[in-house]
Amino acid sequence: MEKKRRGSLQQQQQQQMKEDLEMGEELMQQLRSRATELLLREEWNESVQAYSHFISLCQHHISRIHQHADPDHLFKLQKSLCLALSNRAEARSRLRDLANALQDCDGALEIEGTHFKTLLCKGKILLGLNRYSLALDCFKAALLDPQAGLKCGALEGYLERCKKLEHQSRTGAFDLSDWVVNGFRGKFPELAEYIGAVQIMKSEISGRGLFATKNVDAGTLVLVTKAIATERCILPEQNDDSADNIQLVMWKNFIDKVVESASKCKRLHHLISVLSNGEDEDVLEVPDVNLFRPETEESGLSMGKLDMGKILSILDVNSLVEDATSAKVLGKNSDYYGVGLWILPAFINHSCNPNARRLHVGDNVIVHTSRDVKAGEEITFAYFDVLSPWRKRKDMAKTWGFQCNCKRCKFEEQICSKMEIQEIQMGLERGLDMGDAIYRLEEGMRRWTVRGKEKGYLRASFWAAYSEAYESEKTVRRWGRRIPAVEAVVDSVLEAVGSDERVLKAFMAGLKRSGGGGVVEIERAMKLARGVYGKVVKKQAMRTLISLGY
Image (cartoon, rainbow, N blue to C red; front, side, top):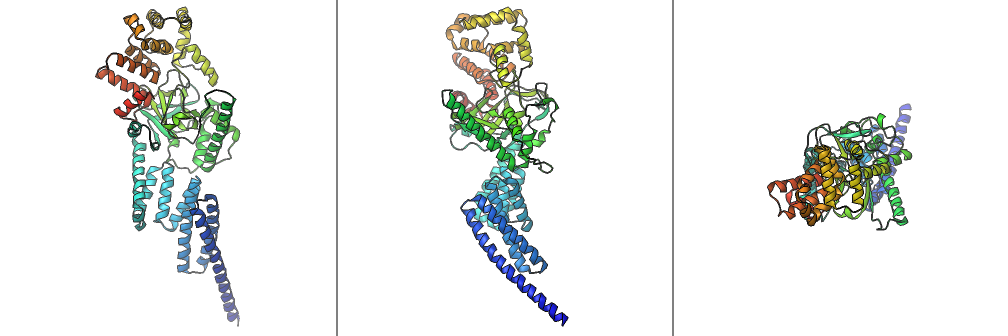
């Protein structure tokens, strides 16, 4: 009798479970159809919610079936779960929730390790995160799946992109020549993340800085990186209240973008928190430069609450304006006023004898040396116009909130106390002949035994006079050999403050006057141009940049 009662109870339980499962499966089918519909309509948030509900029900059913073995049904549920995780990963990736999207991909691949759609999705996410080698592994694995034949063209495209970007990231071999020669038409070139021979160290200038780890020549790439966020607008020509209001709105939008990016990614959150907020610079921890490589694992990184006050301070100190003294904006973005946050370039300090410049290409920044740099030398930008006299630079530094104590400023502070220098400056303000001013300065430097780089410092400070004199054939003829040749001045300014497009322009004008120059002069022009634009284009494209006056 007891056995009969137990058997009857088990039958009732099994029947009830069967009915529950059937009801659950009906609900799951409805949810799956709804989630798929939302996915196809590109309603990403709603799709994630629907798939999350479906996945919870599916996992619950699988756990119940495990207790009462039904292999066929279990297999079907696991296939459904795999596809749902893959689809939710797709929706999350569209929402830039990449960390959770990757978790969904891994969950799906635990169920079916060769699932084509998931491998493709994971590969695209890793490619977007600049983890080129891992992305390449996913695409290669997907290529082995029988379904790959249906999407072979797209998959081959991803493989080629991965290989190209991985090569750029490993070697630093970038080439923008075709884009430049074609007049910057079409999409911006896709650029890999790249970190060259540099490390982060304590800086004598301020806080922490970026330092070269080997000798490099002018134009060598230091790093290439994409912005965490950017914001651009067209400012009115008149600098009035409307321009201020536009910039305020622009700044708010920029802050919102940074906060959103940081809230969705542990790595970005951590990297932003490593930046200086302008306080206690001397006690800040010096991070390993490898932390900034995309392939660095996220394990162990914290994701604390974002302090808006700290975020604002960090952005105030570290944001870069695209159209700056030491920068060139290539392509259609040159028509806009733009601001952005690029993490590693934010470690680069100012110097009045800088050795680096940057190119902005889309949302990417390319940092390169503007003159030859020795191992151990700090990489520096010019935050303001360094082809200016010392007193003017001193005032500009104040507006930036610091006092520049570089070798050049210390030297010029001392020598600018000389009455002759002050008389030359006052004479220029009163309309003194440029040739006369240059002659007096050159004679003064001879008497004061100013040589080498220090001569370049002073010539850079009085560059406006040199430039105007060399532009006037009348002045050049009148003063003749009493003023130095343009080549000599350009060489000394290049050694002192690095390449600048104004210096390049003066040199090219001198070449044109002399009939074009020989091989040595052309190579000198190319070195100057590499210092301005970096080693990212071939000679023909470099000539295009020079002719356009970019």
